[in-house]
Image 1 (cartoon, one colour):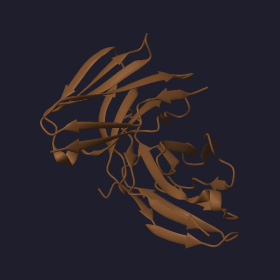
Image 2: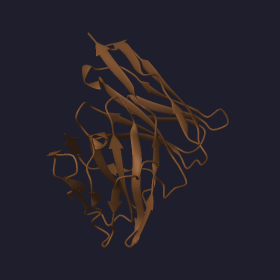
Image 3: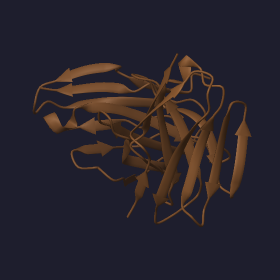
Length: 113
Length: 110
């Protein structure tokens, strides 16, 4: 299994541009999450999904959108990039039978200038 | 609300023992997690506690007291590679998402 994969690894955006951060897992996990981590801070939940077709807001959803059309994929969309969205973004997943461990992707480092 | 507190920084000597504390006040509780995160990398899972008591896994142990809203991570026989950030996180009721503390940056010195 590849686990949780994220693309791209790095990206620089200009203010107002849009982009999609990709996240895919091949473990057939129902639960998937997007977190952001600012320097010296813990991770904050942006959006999560408990299964295909179901998404919900986390602590810091403003400026982001998600979709979950398949079990494997959980893309995160930034429509109008702002400097405040400069951060490292982590995608994670857990399975119904493995609720005691979240598997994290390698992260996407995004800079908005 | 959710409030998870842990020290910002700690320093310890190679070969020693260090204890990293975490206190939490959350609206839901499905377990407490410790993650290790090296600079520029993703968090990696260390331990999970859902019942009171001590869980031991090699050089790492984690303790939980639900009544006190308190946990600690104990690292024994410290190695230089243990220099990293240690994140305390509580599993909330929101689709099993994690609420993270800000992390404790541990520096292991020779």
